Structures are given as structure tokens and as C-alpha cells.
Length: 164
Length: 213
Image (cartoon, rainbow over all chains, first blue to last red; front, top):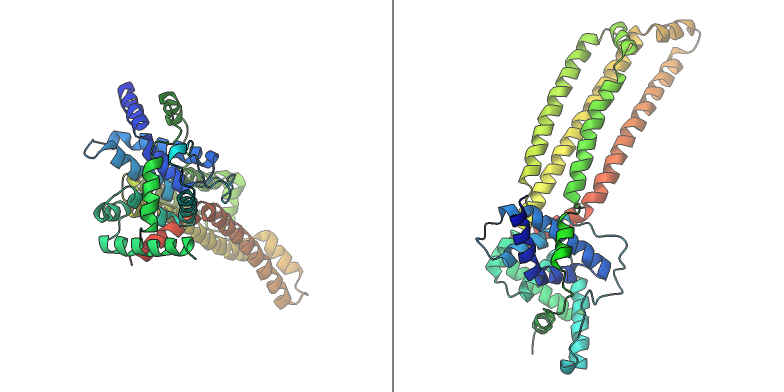
């Protein structure tokens, strides 16, 4: 691999790393698992990078490869405890906009999302990232109508978990 | 009323810049590490299998083995089978390579899963081919052994006073148990290895099929 390719990849990944962190946040719990998945996604991205032609944005291309890795290629490491650390790798909370009640509900929501299966998590991720249904359907390889139906079911499911 | 997910979206956006950042140096280190993806494991195990199966046939071929085949009158047949086996191995290596080339993380989730499952199927066909061959050869060898083996015939001749029915039942059972154990071990081995690797993938594949019925 040429060095300039490597440089360009590292630079772009560094700039766009939050999208990968966000996927890791939904798919793992605990810092070790987060880092493991981040590592595997980085390798898969690097392997696929020569095929990245810049037709789409780096971030769009990267999140697709990352989702594919999280759903299909990644083997969850057994050393993670699935229930305890739902906070993931989130680091600092800005104290000025801390609203206790809302914060509690958001915690509950993150917990609820963690309980979804891998495919549902992918749908939630793309929804949170404001992707339209056309893109969601295309990324997963399903029809737009079915993506919409599934998304509505997930919303219902989350509502039930949060307001039992 | 705000939807739950939209509330989460608000928090999600706010969290956007709260992740501990990875440095360029760390990314450099990461891309030089080895992948531990299931595709890599499937590839490695499959190559090990190809080597194992072709290795086994080499291992057993020696002077004694060839002489025994002559005694059993199946040497010509075995030459043909060996040739066929090599041909099949070459074909499978080609299919295998072709399948792995098509696995691409840039495909849709569904396509990626399908190509992995297809690759796995190729390996499975190869295993079934080998197990079937093993069974067929086992039967041929047993029949020729009973017909031509001087030692076995000696035993049969000298136990004429034994109840022939009991004798043949014992022989039959021995062969059967031998066969069942070998076959069972292979089966278990494959179930364990690939079952372990593929369980989550199959689960997700099923889930996606359920959505897109």
C-alpha cells in the first residue's frame, strides 16, 4: 500500500471518527468492547479503502462499512458484561444543560435501544443520523416499505419499554 | 407528545462530540493489526480443511497400502478415485477463492451476509463430498476385504463351528460402529466450529429476511 493512501485514510478517519464511535456505542457496552469494535471497523475500512472512489462522502461510505462490520463480521468478545455499563464510552457531560428528569429518560432510552437486535439497532442508528428511508433501505438491502414498517414497530417497541 | 426516538435523537446530537478521540498515531497502529472477523476465521478453517483432507490421502499411501489394494482387487479403482479427488480439490479451491473475492464490506448488509453464507455453503459442499466419498470407499473396502482378505478369510475358515449368523452380525456391527464413530466425529467437529462462528450471522440474516418477507 502506498504511503499517501495510508495518510489520506488516517486523516479522513480521524476527522470522521465520531460516526464510528456512535456505531460502537449502540453495538457494544463497556470500553473494552467499544475499542474492540472500533479496531475491527478500522481494519475493514482500511481494507475497503482502495475501492472508495469518493463518489459518496467519506462519512457515508464509512458508516456503511462500519454497520456491515458490526452486524455481519464482528464476533462479540466474551469478556464484556452486557448489562452493567450502558454508558458506553461517553466521556463528559456539560453540567450547564443537565436536566435530571430528561437525562434519566434518555438513559432509559439508551438502555432500551441496547436491548434491540443487531438489525433493529442499525435502523435506529440511521434514524438518529437523519438518514431517509431510501438510504436506510439501500444500506440494509431491503425494500423502502419494509424499512418503514420495521421502523414503526421499533418505535412502538421502545415506547413500551420506556412506558410500561 | 414527542416521540421517544426524537428525544433520543436530541441527546444523540448533543453527544456527538463527547467521544474520546482517537489520534492519528493510534489509527496507524490499528490498520496494521490483524482482523478477527468471522470471514477471516472461516477462510482459515477452510484452508486448513483442504490441507487436512488432501494430507490424509498422502499419509496413507505407502507400499503396504498399495499391496493391500492389489490384494483387494481395487487398485485400479483407487487410482481413479485419487485422480478424481485431486480434480475436485482444485475445483473447490477455485470456487473458494472466487467466493471470497466477492465478499465486500461495501455491499448492502443483506448482500454481504448472502455472500458469506454462500462461501460457507461451498465449504459445506466440500465436506459433504468428502464424507460421501469416505462412506462409499468404506463400503467398497469392507466388501473387498471380506471377499479377498487372506487373514479375514483364514479367520472365517477356522471358525466354521461358530454360528455363521452370529459371526456375521459381530463383523457387521464392528464395521458399523467404526463407521458411525468416524462419521459422527467429523459431523460434530464441523457443527462445533462453524456453528460457533456462524450463529450470530444466521440470526441476523433470519431477522433481515423476516423484515423483508
